[in-house]
Amino acid sequence: HSRVRPQCLGGFGANQMNKLVTQARRLAEELLTPNAATTDAMQVLPRENLDALAAVGLYGVSTLDDPDTLYSVMEILAGACLTTTFVWLQHLGPSRLLASDARWGPRLATGALRSGVAFAHLRRSGPPAIVATPTGDGWTISGTAPWVTGWSRIDVVHLAAMRADDPTQIIWFVLDATESQSMSPNQLDLVAVHASSTVELTLHDHRVSSDHVASMEALETWKVRDAAGLRTNGSVALGHAARTIALLGDDAGMLGARLTRCRDSLNAAADPTSVAAARADATALALHAAGAFVARHGGASIVRGHTAERLAREAMFLFVQGQTAAIRASQVSLLTS
Image (tube, rainbow, N blue to C red; front, top):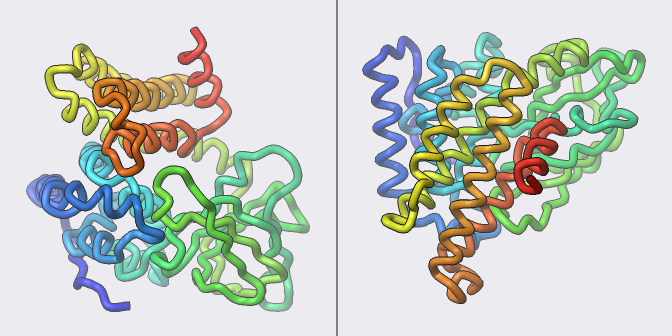
């Protein structure tokens, strides 16, 4: 693909990290926010949006030992264009986890190679959704990943499969994101961020060589790691809420103060239970702020393409994005108490 030359992140210090925040803010103001409504109405978001993020180094931000910079960038981008942010967000996990792997790490860090993920099925109960069976010098993968974002805008998928001969073990693959007879994407018709090109991906006896294996780990080990990383997505809800609060202006009332409390709670959360509660509160704030914006604009808000209509749909989406059973329970409790 023809792409903007990405910026390398090697040796980034404090000034460069601050520069990433500045660059994110510039892209938000000059590119993403002005085109958010147009992007929302498309079938697939413009590749140029993602190229612009790669060109200033934002595809490697998760490889830095600086969560504050990551959270700030996520808030800024999410408040500008949730669709673009959601596609970029999928890349951050593989970029971090594979940073030391010479096969993929350097290209992921610059955005020269762009990744999606397929692991949401690991959070579901019941039989494994995707299994991998040893076959000769490689593996045969079968099953369905219910949620893979960025199809046609990503190069690879970081996919989790359970070992067919040991379902307590996860095998992480890096697969080419290319449709074939044994790999079939079915685009989901989402009510928000539809242009993220999120698909249900079915693999039927998909054969890969052993060099597509990135790592292996115990399912229980992953569960601990997954719970420890749930704070990150909270910044997406905060960014969306911040944007809506800014648009409300003088009508925002105490929402600005609530935004600060939500951010402080997320940053202070030290265990999975408190993170789940803080995540739930952040998504509830996004929904609350969007509801206030709808109320202010009245009937115009239910006309397709109105900013309030889009923000309301996106707030609903954020309620289920990255959701776990614990977050869901906290969300239900918040809305019913």
